[in-house]
Length: 262
Image (spheres, rainbow, N blue to C red):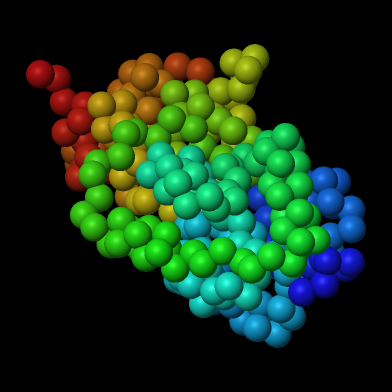
């Protein structure tokens, strides 16, 4: 590896977050050249084998081959930095294993500390730490039956060219939009807005608090706190009217039971 001309690979399945990290790296480490970007673990391994960068920034959760599997394939041939949404177990494991990691959204101060450690490691040309024991522990943890996660509290969503952090409690409803999910939410001023999330609706529903969020149509999930009133229709259907927006949402026969009088 060349300390004089460091190179990197960035693997992250969310394009906006991937580009954001590349920009942050350009600011924090101008001498570093990002020679490859990858959308999943398989691409990360392929591009690593082709270009052999000095540093690999790997998102832990990617479709198909994840960041842990990619790190196992890369082994001790590069410095690895894991990038993760906050996960208590993973963060504790990374800290105990003295492994560099970044929590999304990546903070500039934390990135600066990571860059400093990487620069020191490249300059010293010291052997790269063996991550195999840590990776095995993480893989076993992921394979074990998962304990129920607490309800989702925040969503990262695309609003134009920006990525916004949106409080789940501010969401009025979610609607399936092909491979994506469109969310209708209330902004800081209380005015309604819309944003796009890459996660499919069915996957988001599993993470939402069922006390407040219910499915009302195969393509629609509503926040019950946002409902003003329900108008019954023909054939055991209904239509939902919301408190803060003019949208009227369909309720199919399969889900109308949520709104029957007790």
